[in-house]
Image 1 (cartoon, rainbow, N blue to C red):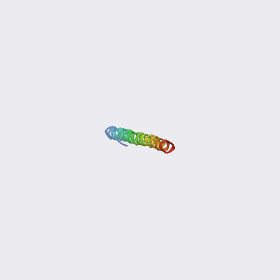
Image 2 (cartoon, rainbow, N blue to C red):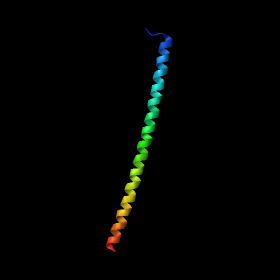
Image 3 (cartoon, rainbow, N blue to C red):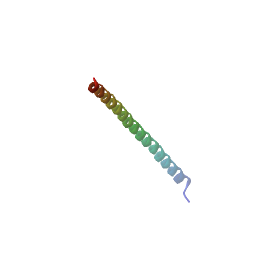
Image 4 (cartoon, helix red, strand yellow):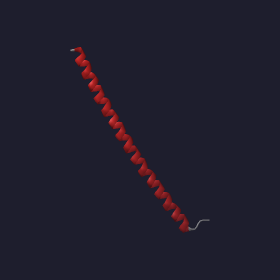
Length: 59
């Protein structure tokens, strides 16, 4: 059986690993959100440019 000190040390390591996983997950979500926002903005700009180009062709 593991001693109380070993059990406490394993719990501390487990908590640290869990906290690190949460932080890394939040960083990943932040980067994905930034990328999705940039893509949405680019698509909006492209749509506006296409619409303006179509108007110029009509007139």
